[in-house]
Length: 289
Image (tube, rainbow, N blue to C red; front, side, top):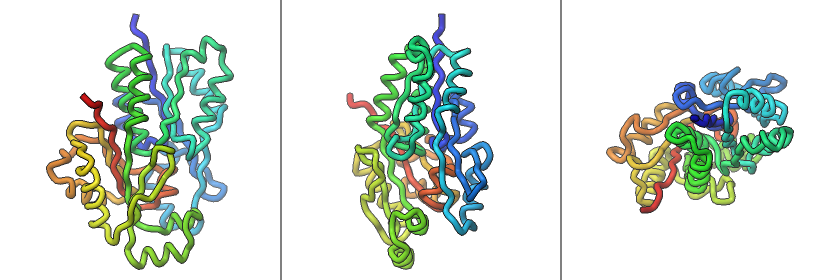
């Protein structure tokens, strides 16, 4: 008898609706709030609608995690038809969403808890999306829950993400840097290069002057690491600036085959913190032979 395994993630995975449908992934939305108006990320507001509103908003929106009650409803519904649930969520260093999922699982009987497998991804956005896709691919290829969980563990431990901000305005509005630092940086056309480190923290690894130099920095870093983008799961993301995504792909030249990776516009929750124009790449390192 075939064992059914359902992959669950949250909306910070920033996967397109077509990919969510293709891999039959359940996406639980976080919420972005403009004042007293709340919008479920990816459901009530699209990425494009969000960035359009963000650009004209005088105040920075704030985001809300998924609450335990919502997860409990999702788990109940899916357990009626699925043998196992594998939930992979935004890093607990960024959001309480993973902890909400754990609280919800603890409300079930011990027998049902054994069918709910939860993972703190230690990352977010395109990297989280890649991990969810890898889990879904494994669930399609095998009905062994141990194999799927092992693949998730590997993908989490070997996921990497690098992105460039196009403006310092949203770091300033979010209180991460001062307004004077942002103003001077923007005047000098400074582009911070960021990553998520092993402690699941967003850290700056460099800064360059100019968009093209920033994109070239990312490309050189990837190639210097010996990463063959044709042989590993890879995702490219942008903050509602398709031109920046195309510029990044152009910098990779023959190293990246157009359409071979996941490409998406970053969603409302992540976009709140990175701002429009950001661009980046995520990948999962290949297993060493």
